[in-house]
Length: 355
Image (tube, rainbow, N blue to C red; front, side):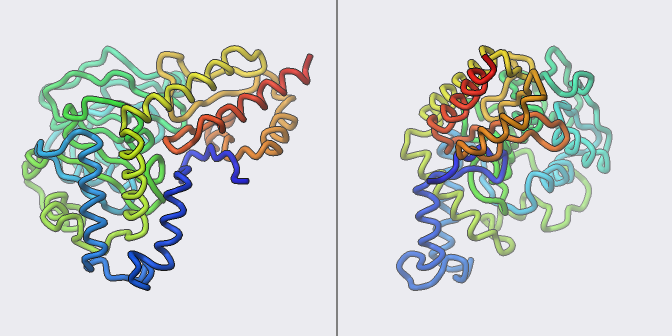
C-alpha cells in the first residue's frame, strides 16, 4: 500500500496521473516510442505543450484576456531573476514573508532599487504583514502567496495600480482567486502540479517591453512567448505530467471543487492541532496555510515516540523544513482526505498513550 505522502516537494501526484505517465514512458500515444525519446518538435509533443498551456489559462479563468502561459526551466529560483530582468526599470516593491520571498528580493537588487514594504522576519515569519503601502512609482509589487517553510498563506492581496507579481509555487490551482488582479504568476511545478523540472509562468503580455536593458534570449519572456514556449528543448516529461495533472483537476470540477476538498483537509488537521494538548501550531491562525500546516510537540520528550508512530502508520514527509524543525504536513491537491485522517489518528493515539 502506498504511503501517505505529505512531502513538501516534489509533491504527491494523483494515482491515475502516475499510471498514465508510467505508460507513456514505455509507449507514448501507441507510437511504440517512449515519451522521453521522441522529438520535442514532433506533433505529438507539440500537442502536449499546447494542451498544458491552454489548460493552465482555462483553469485560472484567463483565456482570451491577454495572458500567455509558458512552461520554462530553472524553477521558481530562476524566475526570481527573470522577473527583475524583464520588469525592473528603477524600483520594485517586495513583501518579505519568508525564505523564498527573501531570495526573490535578493536577486532583484542586481537590477535596481528594491523596497521592502513589510516583513514578518521579526517573528520568524509566523504571520503575514498587513496594512503596508506600495510605492506608486514601483515598476511592480512582488509577493509570495504561500510560504512552504513557515506555513503561512496570503488570504487577501493588496489593491494597487502597480503591476502585481506573485510566486504561487506551492498553492497554484488550489483555491479560487481573482487571477486577473495579477500581471505575472509563476510556480515551480513540483509543489502542486507535477514533477520537478518545469516552471509555469502566466504573464499579461502588455507589461513586457518596457525595460531598456538588453535581456539575454533565454531570460526574455517575449522570446519564449513568440516561440510558443519552445525556444529551447523543454522538460518533456515534466510538462507532460503537469498536463495530465491539470486535466485531472479539470475533470474533477476545477479549482472550485478542489478548494472545497482542501478546506476540509486543512480544517481536519488544524482542529486536531488546536484540540490536542500535545501539539501547537506555530503561525498566526488567520494566516495559516491550507497547503502546509506547521506544528510542534508541546513536549519534545515525545518526539521519538511520535516519530515511530507516524512512520509505522505509513506516513511520510512530515518533518519540518531543516531551517525551522518541528513538523510540516503538506496537503497539496492530490493528497486524499483519508491521509490527513491517518495523521490525525496517530496524533490522537499519542494523546491516549499519555493518559
